[in-house]
Amino acid sequence: MKISWPAYGMLCLLLFGFLPACSEKIDRQSTAISILEPCPGFVETGKPPLVYGAECGELILKENPADANSKDISVAILRLPAISPVADADPLFLIQGGPGGSSIEMANQIHSFFADVRKNRDLIFVDQRGTGKSNPLRCEQATPEDLKLPESEQTEKYLRLMKSCAEKYQHNAAFYTTIHAVQDLDAVRSALGYEKINLWGGSYGTRVALEYARRYPQQARTIILDGVAPVSIALPKYFARDAMAALVAVNNECLAQTDCAAEFGDIVQKAETVLQRLNDLQGEGEPLEVRYEHPRNQQTESFHLTPRTFSSLLFMSLYSRDLTVLLPRAISFAEKEDYRLLAALSALSAEQAQFMNIAEAMRYSVICNEDWPQLSASDIEQSIPFFGIPFVKDIQPICALWPKAELPADYWVPIKSDVPALLLSGKHDPVTPDVWAQTVAAHLSNATSLSAAGGNHSVSSEGCVPQLIAQFIERASMQNVKADCVEKIKPLPLVLGANKKKSSSSATDSSSSSNVSSAGSEK
Image 1 (cartoon, rainbow, N blue to C red):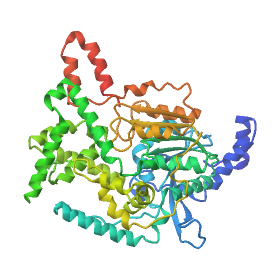
Image 2 (image 1 turned 90 degrees about the vertical axis):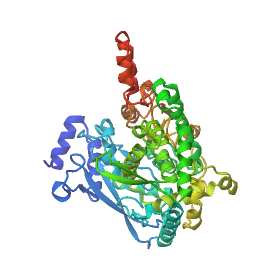
Image 3 (image 1 turned 45 degrees about the horizontal axis):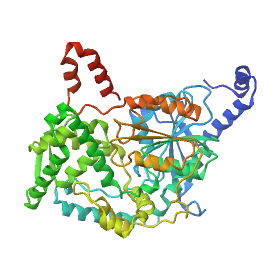
Image 4 (image 1 turned 120 degrees about the vertical axis):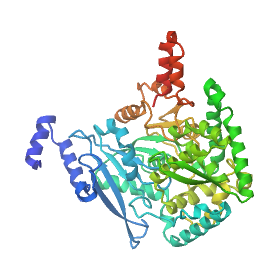
């Protein structure tokens, strides 16, 4: 039902006793109407909009903001309106990680975790320029047949593809950095009629949120940083160190659990054994082909297990709490030459990567211009691999040829801000562990850091964290917010059925066993 202005004005007068606030709401909505409209529905897409009243649109901007004659690009926007008919004036902008991921595609997976926030505030998802539907910068991908080639040939093919991609975007890539992203965010804020905004960022998205707080402190009401990745993280300089620390943490937890220690033992040592065996097979020219049943559809598929795919699987599994819990079993089985669970984990990990839908050229435009310049020649020479993956040396030839961008002189200076900030970390995070949250928090005068012992890469969906985020945004402060519930986000049992065994081991101990089970399975 549409309400005319006189009727709406009278309604505001009756509810609030004055008109200015409602007048401001009308102005904001009329400003947005030119770029937002109802998202396509079932008739157009075969599925309903994400939520009732979801709005989609785009904002046209210049690719080079400093050149009025630069070509136009569109920045895609999704707004999930607040449930309250009178929404608070400051929405929550949610920023995807990557770099190179689509925030709008992310909305499908995470919007429900922000249901408490959406009771009173709009949720805004903006595809960062170069990603999703915002003029994505994509590179040609390797084919399934390429994945059957020897690893050295796969590497050569990939570098050829990246060289071609760099040439394709040689005149564009410089305008797809974090600085341009925050300028676009503020342009969207202004176009939608918001004076202040709250920002949530995951992984690389935390860098965008931090930079926005630096460049637009008057517009940033609060920032929530999940898996903190400041520019000083210098991707991928610390990948091997942080991933090994996460794997060792899982190993130590396994060795501390009687059932896990007895059944699986030292999984780091076993992983090294598996890697050596795969290296030997590769050296003999006998790649290992594994036939397994896909965990989603139970269809028989084949999987080529190479040293790099094994190491990559270890790394990627540490991103996810649900995959991490299966690592001890998968590694132990592989050490006994049963690779089927590893193959199944690889299929699930590939699904997660597909969900990210990374725009590779945009990713390298960020990393090669913001992170790589911080690595010295000795950093490159002395970099250590993670189970044979030389993360730093892998990216070196790509960044050597990638188009260069000019960034402000202060871009690499630690960000100082008094904007209320909530920093979130997970103990098993292989790329953005708590140490990076502490590094950033040291320069934020109004920051609270929380770390979940059972968390991995992103904890906003775990346990009580969604409610804590909602309370933080509501108050713009963590003062008097009880956050001790984060301590209940424990690591999942590393042996399937361990909790059941404990609860049935003794009838007299059923009460305490129940408590252990509840804490151990907290999500």
